[in-house]
Image (cartoon, rainbow, N blue to C red; front, side, top):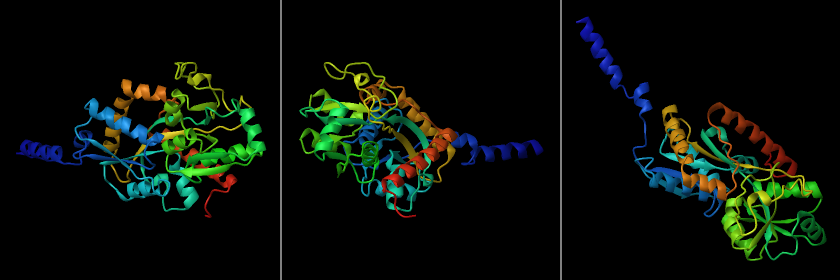
Length: 330
Protein backbone atom coordinates (compact mmCIF):
# COMPACT_ATOMS: atom_id res chain seq x y z
CA UNK A 1 0.00 0.00 0.00
CA UNK A 2 2.84 2.33 0.89
CA UNK A 3 4.48 1.69 -2.50
CA UNK A 4 1.15 2.28 -4.25
CA UNK A 5 0.65 5.55 -2.37
CA UNK A 6 4.12 6.79 -3.28
CA UNK A 7 3.51 5.86 -6.92
CA UNK A 8 0.18 7.66 -6.92
CA UNK A 9 1.77 10.78 -5.40
CA UNK A 10 4.54 10.69 -8.00
CA UNK A 11 1.95 10.48 -10.77
CA UNK A 12 0.09 13.49 -9.37
CA UNK A 13 3.31 15.54 -9.13
CA UNK A 14 4.29 14.55 -12.66
CA UNK A 15 0.93 15.76 -13.94
CA UNK A 16 1.10 19.11 -12.10
CA UNK A 17 1.16 21.94 -14.69
CA UNK A 18 3.71 24.00 -12.80
CA UNK A 19 6.41 21.36 -12.47
CA UNK A 20 9.84 21.85 -14.05
CA UNK A 21 9.42 19.26 -16.79
CA UNK A 22 6.08 20.70 -17.87
CA UNK A 23 7.51 24.23 -17.91
CA UNK A 24 10.48 23.02 -19.93
CA UNK A 25 8.08 21.88 -22.64
CA UNK A 26 6.34 25.27 -22.92
CA UNK A 27 5.72 26.68 -26.37
CA UNK A 28 3.19 29.18 -27.78
CA UNK A 29 -0.35 27.86 -28.14
CA UNK A 30 -1.65 30.72 -30.28
CA UNK A 31 -0.21 33.35 -32.67
CA UNK A 32 2.47 35.58 -31.16
CA UNK A 33 2.01 39.32 -31.51
CA UNK A 34 5.31 41.07 -32.27
CA UNK A 35 5.13 44.78 -31.41
CA UNK A 36 7.34 47.32 -33.17
CA UNK A 37 7.49 50.63 -31.25
CA UNK A 38 8.24 52.56 -34.46
CA UNK A 39 6.85 53.17 -37.93
CA UNK A 40 7.14 50.94 -40.99
CA UNK A 41 10.32 50.83 -43.04
CA UNK A 42 12.72 51.65 -40.23
CA UNK A 43 15.41 49.42 -38.80
CA UNK A 44 13.25 47.89 -36.05
CA UNK A 45 10.42 47.17 -38.47
CA UNK A 46 12.77 45.57 -40.99
CA UNK A 47 14.40 43.38 -38.34
CA UNK A 48 11.06 42.26 -36.92
CA UNK A 49 9.81 41.26 -40.35
CA UNK A 50 13.03 39.39 -41.15
CA UNK A 51 12.61 37.43 -37.91
CA UNK A 52 8.97 36.76 -38.79
CA UNK A 53 9.98 35.49 -42.24
CA UNK A 54 12.81 33.30 -40.94
CA UNK A 55 10.61 31.65 -38.31
CA UNK A 56 7.97 30.93 -40.93
CA UNK A 57 10.32 29.74 -43.67
CA UNK A 58 12.28 27.37 -41.43
CA UNK A 59 9.29 26.22 -39.37
CA UNK A 60 10.99 27.22 -36.14
CA UNK A 61 7.69 27.61 -34.30
CA UNK A 62 4.28 25.98 -34.69
CA UNK A 63 2.41 29.26 -34.24
CA UNK A 64 2.83 32.26 -36.56
CA UNK A 65 4.36 35.60 -35.59
CA UNK A 66 2.24 38.66 -36.39
CA UNK A 67 4.15 41.96 -36.66
CA UNK A 68 2.22 45.03 -35.46
CA UNK A 69 3.61 48.57 -35.71
CA UNK A 70 2.67 50.86 -32.84
CA UNK A 71 4.91 53.89 -33.04
CA UNK A 72 2.55 56.38 -31.42
CA UNK A 73 4.14 58.65 -28.84
CA UNK A 74 7.66 57.71 -29.98
CA UNK A 75 6.95 54.10 -29.07
CA UNK A 76 5.05 54.82 -25.86
CA UNK A 77 1.93 53.15 -27.26
CA UNK A 78 3.74 49.84 -27.73
CA UNK A 79 5.66 50.03 -24.45
CA UNK A 80 2.54 50.66 -22.37
CA UNK A 81 0.69 47.85 -24.14
CA UNK A 82 3.50 45.42 -23.41
CA UNK A 83 3.66 46.60 -19.79
CA UNK A 84 -0.08 46.04 -19.42
CA UNK A 85 0.03 42.52 -20.87
CA UNK A 86 1.35 41.02 -17.64
CA UNK A 87 1.87 37.27 -17.80
CA UNK A 88 1.11 37.06 -21.54
CA UNK A 89 3.79 34.89 -23.19
CA UNK A 90 2.25 35.41 -26.62
CA UNK A 91 3.51 38.97 -26.95
CA UNK A 92 7.02 40.11 -27.90
CA UNK A 93 8.36 43.60 -28.45
CA UNK A 94 11.48 44.58 -30.36
CA UNK A 95 13.25 47.50 -28.76
CA UNK A 96 15.68 50.19 -29.74
CA UNK A 97 16.99 53.18 -27.83
CA UNK A 98 13.51 54.66 -27.45
CA UNK A 99 13.17 52.09 -24.67
CA UNK A 100 15.20 54.66 -22.70
CA UNK A 101 14.64 57.93 -24.54
CA UNK A 102 10.83 57.93 -24.63
CA UNK A 103 10.23 57.63 -20.86
CA UNK A 104 13.11 60.03 -20.09
CA UNK A 105 11.80 62.61 -22.57
CA UNK A 106 8.10 62.32 -21.76
CA UNK A 107 7.84 61.11 -18.19
CA UNK A 108 5.33 58.40 -19.15
CA UNK A 109 4.79 55.74 -16.43
CA UNK A 110 7.13 53.23 -18.02
CA UNK A 111 10.65 51.93 -17.51
CA UNK A 112 12.51 49.06 -19.16
CA UNK A 113 12.24 47.21 -15.83
CA UNK A 114 8.48 47.00 -16.49
CA UNK A 115 9.28 44.40 -19.15
CA UNK A 116 11.12 41.07 -19.16
CA UNK A 117 14.46 41.18 -21.01
CA UNK A 118 14.86 38.24 -23.39
CA UNK A 119 17.83 38.80 -25.69
CA UNK A 120 19.93 41.53 -27.22
CA UNK A 121 20.27 40.55 -30.87
CA UNK A 122 22.81 43.12 -32.04
CA UNK A 123 23.92 46.72 -31.76
CA UNK A 124 22.99 49.02 -34.61
CA UNK A 125 25.31 51.61 -36.10
CA UNK A 126 24.59 55.20 -37.13
CA UNK A 127 26.01 56.83 -40.23
CA UNK A 128 26.12 60.47 -41.29
CA UNK A 129 24.38 60.47 -44.69
CA UNK A 130 24.02 63.26 -47.25
CA UNK A 131 22.40 63.38 -50.66
CA UNK A 132 24.67 61.97 -53.37
CA UNK A 133 24.39 65.25 -55.29
CA UNK A 134 25.55 67.35 -52.33
CA UNK A 135 28.81 69.25 -52.91
CA UNK A 136 30.41 68.06 -49.65
CA UNK A 137 32.17 64.71 -49.79
CA UNK A 138 33.89 64.76 -46.40
CA UNK A 139 32.93 65.62 -42.83
CA UNK A 140 35.06 68.81 -42.74
CA UNK A 141 33.42 70.03 -45.96
CA UNK A 142 29.97 69.25 -44.54
CA UNK A 143 30.72 71.14 -41.34
CA UNK A 144 32.11 74.09 -43.30
CA UNK A 145 28.87 74.26 -45.28
CA UNK A 146 26.87 74.03 -42.06
CA UNK A 147 28.74 76.98 -40.58
CA UNK A 148 27.90 79.05 -43.64
CA UNK A 149 24.22 78.07 -43.83
CA UNK A 150 22.04 76.33 -41.25
CA UNK A 151 21.46 72.81 -42.59
CA UNK A 152 18.49 70.49 -41.99
CA UNK A 153 18.90 67.14 -40.26
CA UNK A 154 16.06 64.61 -40.41
CA UNK A 155 15.49 61.94 -37.80
CA UNK A 156 13.05 59.45 -36.32
CA UNK A 157 11.01 61.35 -33.78
CA UNK A 158 11.65 64.21 -31.42
CA UNK A 159 14.11 63.85 -28.52
CA UNK A 160 15.00 60.37 -29.72
CA UNK A 161 18.37 58.85 -30.60
CA UNK A 162 18.70 60.69 -33.94
CA UNK A 163 18.18 64.08 -32.32
CA UNK A 164 20.53 63.11 -29.48
CA UNK A 165 23.27 62.53 -32.06
CA UNK A 166 22.53 65.84 -33.79
CA UNK A 167 22.68 67.60 -30.41
CA UNK A 168 26.02 65.90 -29.74
CA UNK A 169 27.32 67.15 -33.11
CA UNK A 170 26.29 70.68 -32.16
CA UNK A 171 27.98 70.31 -28.77
CA UNK A 172 31.19 69.03 -30.38
CA UNK A 173 31.34 71.66 -33.11
CA UNK A 174 29.30 74.63 -31.91
CA UNK A 175 27.29 74.45 -35.15
CA UNK A 176 23.47 74.63 -34.85
CA UNK A 177 21.22 72.58 -37.13
CA UNK A 178 17.50 72.48 -37.86
CA UNK A 179 16.15 69.11 -36.77
CA UNK A 180 13.03 67.73 -38.50
CA UNK A 181 11.33 64.65 -36.96
CA UNK A 182 9.71 61.92 -39.06
CA UNK A 183 7.68 58.82 -38.21
CA UNK A 184 10.39 56.31 -39.09
CA UNK A 185 13.79 55.73 -40.63
CA UNK A 186 12.27 54.81 -43.98
CA UNK A 187 10.56 58.19 -44.27
CA UNK A 188 13.78 59.95 -43.24
CA UNK A 189 15.76 58.21 -45.99
CA UNK A 190 13.16 59.10 -48.62
CA UNK A 191 13.22 62.75 -47.52
CA UNK A 192 17.00 62.87 -47.92
CA UNK A 193 16.82 61.29 -51.37
CA UNK A 194 14.15 63.82 -52.33
CA UNK A 195 16.29 66.78 -51.31
CA UNK A 196 14.06 67.83 -48.42
CA UNK A 197 17.00 67.46 -46.00
CA UNK A 198 20.73 68.06 -46.11
CA UNK A 199 21.67 65.19 -43.78
CA UNK A 200 20.49 62.26 -41.67
CA UNK A 201 22.07 59.86 -39.19
CA UNK A 202 20.11 56.82 -40.37
CA UNK A 203 21.09 53.27 -39.47
CA UNK A 204 22.89 51.42 -42.28
CA UNK A 205 19.94 49.10 -42.97
CA UNK A 206 17.64 52.11 -43.43
CA UNK A 207 19.78 53.68 -46.15
CA UNK A 208 21.69 50.85 -47.82
CA UNK A 209 19.27 50.46 -50.74
CA UNK A 210 19.50 54.19 -51.50
CA UNK A 211 23.30 54.03 -51.20
CA UNK A 212 23.40 51.17 -53.70
CA UNK A 213 21.14 53.16 -56.02
CA UNK A 214 23.56 56.08 -55.91
CA UNK A 215 21.11 58.41 -54.19
CA UNK A 216 22.89 59.01 -50.87
CA UNK A 217 26.51 59.23 -49.69
CA UNK A 218 27.93 58.14 -46.31
CA UNK A 219 30.42 60.55 -44.72
CA UNK A 220 31.28 58.80 -41.44
CA UNK A 221 30.13 56.18 -38.93
CA UNK A 222 29.47 57.01 -35.26
CA UNK A 223 31.52 54.14 -33.83
CA UNK A 224 34.97 53.86 -32.29
CA UNK A 225 36.14 51.68 -35.18
CA UNK A 226 35.35 51.24 -38.84
CA UNK A 227 32.66 48.77 -39.79
CA UNK A 228 34.10 45.30 -40.41
CA UNK A 229 32.12 44.35 -43.53
CA UNK A 230 34.54 44.39 -46.48
CA UNK A 231 32.18 43.11 -49.18
CA UNK A 232 31.28 45.84 -51.67
CA UNK A 233 27.81 47.32 -51.11
CA UNK A 234 28.13 49.58 -54.14
CA UNK A 235 30.32 49.20 -57.22
CA UNK A 236 33.21 50.90 -55.46
CA UNK A 237 32.58 50.97 -51.70
CA UNK A 238 32.17 48.63 -48.75
CA UNK A 239 30.97 49.48 -45.25
CA UNK A 240 34.59 49.21 -44.12
CA UNK A 241 35.54 52.08 -46.44
CA UNK A 242 33.51 54.59 -44.44
CA UNK A 243 35.74 56.45 -41.95
CA UNK A 244 34.72 56.87 -38.35
CA UNK A 245 33.45 60.31 -37.43
CA UNK A 246 36.27 60.63 -34.91
CA UNK A 247 38.97 60.04 -37.53
CA UNK A 248 37.16 62.60 -39.69
CA UNK A 249 37.45 65.25 -36.98
CA UNK A 250 33.98 64.86 -35.43
CA UNK A 251 34.31 63.38 -31.92
CA UNK A 252 30.84 61.79 -31.55
CA UNK A 253 30.01 58.11 -30.96
CA UNK A 254 26.65 56.36 -30.58
CA UNK A 255 25.33 52.81 -31.02
CA UNK A 256 21.81 51.51 -30.48
CA UNK A 257 20.54 48.15 -29.32
CA UNK A 258 18.19 45.83 -31.16
CA UNK A 259 16.68 43.57 -28.53
CA UNK A 260 13.63 41.49 -27.68
CA UNK A 261 11.52 41.83 -24.51
CA UNK A 262 8.37 40.19 -23.15
CA UNK A 263 5.68 41.51 -20.80
CA UNK A 264 6.26 41.33 -17.05
CA UNK A 265 5.22 38.25 -15.08
CA UNK A 266 6.16 35.58 -17.61
CA UNK A 267 7.94 32.39 -16.54
CA UNK A 268 11.59 31.56 -17.13
CA UNK A 269 10.54 28.58 -19.24
CA UNK A 270 8.65 30.95 -21.54
CA UNK A 271 11.64 33.28 -21.74
CA UNK A 272 13.90 30.32 -22.48
CA UNK A 273 11.69 29.26 -25.38
CA UNK A 274 12.22 32.60 -27.11
CA UNK A 275 15.94 32.72 -26.28
CA UNK A 276 16.29 29.35 -27.99
CA UNK A 277 14.10 30.46 -30.91
CA UNK A 278 16.11 33.63 -31.47
CA UNK A 279 19.38 31.72 -31.31
CA UNK A 280 18.06 29.46 -34.09
CA UNK A 281 17.14 32.59 -36.06
CA UNK A 282 20.68 33.92 -35.64
CA UNK A 283 22.14 30.76 -37.18
CA UNK A 284 20.26 31.13 -40.49
CA UNK A 285 21.78 32.51 -43.67
CA UNK A 286 18.98 35.06 -43.92
CA UNK A 287 19.93 36.54 -40.55
CA UNK A 288 23.62 36.57 -41.40
CA UNK A 289 22.80 38.37 -44.63
CA UNK A 290 20.79 41.00 -42.72
CA UNK A 291 23.72 41.53 -40.36
CA UNK A 292 26.04 42.02 -43.33
CA UNK A 293 23.72 44.28 -45.32
CA UNK A 294 23.06 46.42 -42.25
CA UNK A 295 26.66 46.36 -40.98
CA UNK A 296 25.45 45.43 -37.49
CA UNK A 297 27.69 45.08 -34.47
CA UNK A 298 27.11 41.40 -33.56
CA UNK A 299 27.12 41.84 -29.78
CA UNK A 300 24.46 39.64 -28.14
CA UNK A 301 23.47 39.29 -24.47
CA UNK A 302 20.98 37.44 -22.26
CA UNK A 303 20.34 37.07 -18.54
CA UNK A 304 22.18 39.10 -15.90
CA UNK A 305 24.83 40.52 -18.27
CA UNK A 306 22.00 41.94 -20.39
CA UNK A 307 20.32 43.46 -17.31
CA UNK A 308 23.59 45.07 -16.25
CA UNK A 309 24.09 46.48 -19.76
CA UNK A 310 20.56 47.91 -19.75
CA UNK A 311 21.17 49.58 -16.38
CA UNK A 312 24.33 51.28 -17.63
CA UNK A 313 22.75 52.29 -20.93
CA UNK A 314 19.73 53.86 -19.23
CA UNK A 315 22.01 56.04 -17.11
CA UNK A 316 24.08 57.00 -20.14
CA UNK A 317 20.96 58.11 -21.99
CA UNK A 318 19.73 60.07 -18.99
CA UNK A 319 23.04 61.95 -18.94
CA UNK A 320 23.03 62.59 -22.69
CA UNK A 321 19.42 63.78 -22.70
CA UNK A 322 19.84 65.98 -19.66
CA UNK A 323 22.86 67.66 -21.23
CA UNK A 324 20.86 68.23 -24.42
CA UNK A 325 17.85 69.59 -22.51
CA UNK A 326 15.64 66.72 -23.67
CA UNK A 327 14.80 65.16 -20.27
CA UNK A 328 11.37 65.76 -18.74
CA UNK A 329 11.25 67.27 -15.26
CA UNK A 330 11.52 64.56 -12.63
